[in-house]
Image (cartoon, rainbow, N blue to C red; front, top):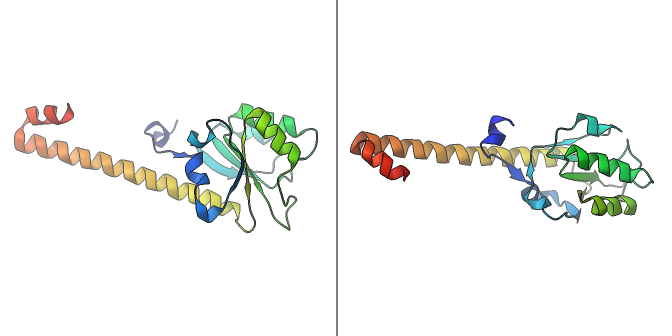
Length: 171
């Protein structure tokens, strides 16, 4: 884990889905998916993208590298799930391969408990990535501010009231 991950500076899938400006269409909400800590949001059209994943991701795709409506979609969803992907987002739009989520993809995502959502036209993937990055930065800032405030409080207690006050404050 990176320092930020081990210190708890995380954004959950539910927090990202709740961003109204993104208008994400959650179609498959697996049992605990909204509580999952997201490590990164990125897009890929690689057919074997699972070989490049570390777990905890939201993967965005328009489905160029995959047949999202074919018989192999179950294998694709399974590989993503085994790689630790928390959610799959499909770009939808009039000039894109998909205008709506394919039924076989929805079926397989439900069966394998992979969270699935549509990214509607005209929301670009970069907006989803940017929203995640801003949320992560805001959470990091909040945590660092809390830690800094506690440090100042401890230093003040120590300087004005001695070690016993610091021990009392920590208790």
